Length: 172
Image (tube, rainbow, N blue to C red):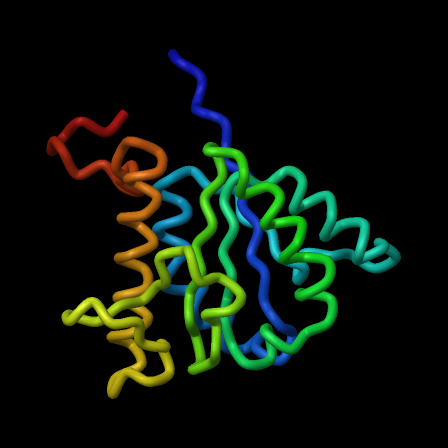
């Protein structure tokens, strides 16, 4: 039996003020992450006694996919602006790295991630913050769909199904 492909190290960068909203966003993104074989790290995984700045630096140095959760709090965080984003920008020079900026709350992101395709966009292909959608679930779902598509293009293959429904009676 062939070995499962190695999980793709992934780092989520966000502002702590947005932790509750991140948890909701993760509910929409986790099936996408699982289907594409991503091993997702965010600083909520830190254990007591760990040096958070060292652990964040390690996660960034290992990551091949970065998710940036863009909000006003993210864009004014001194740590994000002076430590995380410069390290992510340096990693982005590698063609094997994908950076996925997701606008969660309306903010002026253009001077920070201007060259990158921003997620989510509406049917008119205009960037719309998730919080600006009339039904927030629609913005969350659109973001998940666009992250899935970006990963498919970057990795060169669609996500694997989480459950195999291809044939009845085929279970071991």
